Length: 217
View (cartoon, rainbow, N blue to C red):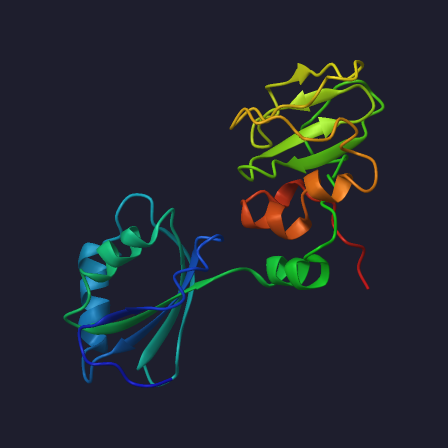
């Protein structure tokens, strides 16, 4: 990695913030490692509320620390680094877990399959769930093809409603943007690919825990 001027915080790849995990490379200024540890002992991490420590490693020469932090937004990370920039140069890289990366690379276009054993959605007892994505606004919802139960928000299993799709003019309407689906038979080919979310889209929305796990190879 190239050296950066002292006192600067470098943030790379801002577009990759969906995971809200940050790998932070800390470069101690020459001779400042003892002062870094003294300040930490006396004042703690000085992290703002909402910034969570995950793990860290220090090289054998006490020149660099590799730290993983979790935050709801990058501003919290910068607020934290500001307390240490007199002693440390920071490079901040938004990252995702290896499990999420593998799921995206192996199944970016794989239809999102709900983990029926672990997911909190329950309705008719013979659930056949599909994770739907509105083509107009990208809102994610869960639909049971067995009993026409719609969970309007994939994040909230407590909310559900029954959708009537018996008449020719009946359409499923997105609960977020109120745009009706163009196709009444949205779960049948060739229409289904337009409405069914992919694994990548579900993971990018922070809902990867809903997905059925791929069998180990």
